Amino acid sequence: MKYLLDTHTLLWFLTNDKKLSDRARQLIENSNNESFLSIVSLWEIAIKTALGKLDLAEPFEQMFPKQLQLNRIEVLDITVDSLIKLTTLPFHHRDPFDRLIIAQGLVEEVPIISVDTVFDAYGVDREW
Image 1 (cartoon, helix red, strand yellow):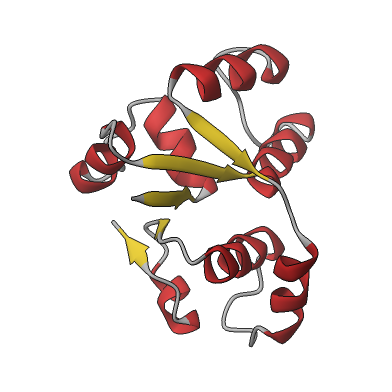
Image 2 (spheres, rainbow, N blue to C red):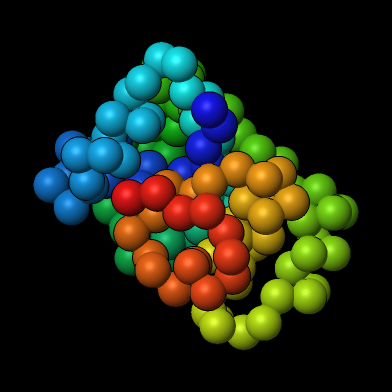
């Protein structure tokens, strides 16, 4: 099964944060599953790191290439189809990063691993 990780899901997974549900951890760690991370999540993390709103254990340029490879997480690029879908989404959620992740989940037809229940309003499959 394929899954798309929300930004907080990746960060909580990498830091062993207790806020990550056991189910989410199992889905990510299951070698039969494929985990994807939107490029928009890396963009969000880079922006927050540069602004001093997010502290990472290692410099961004070291942490993410290494951790993505180590944990078999593939980066999902933004496609025109995802942007088209984004233009049609209602505004249940104002966060531009989350809205694009939702659009990608819908277009790619993959569940999103996220604690954010507002995702449910978009009809995307959400696991937690």
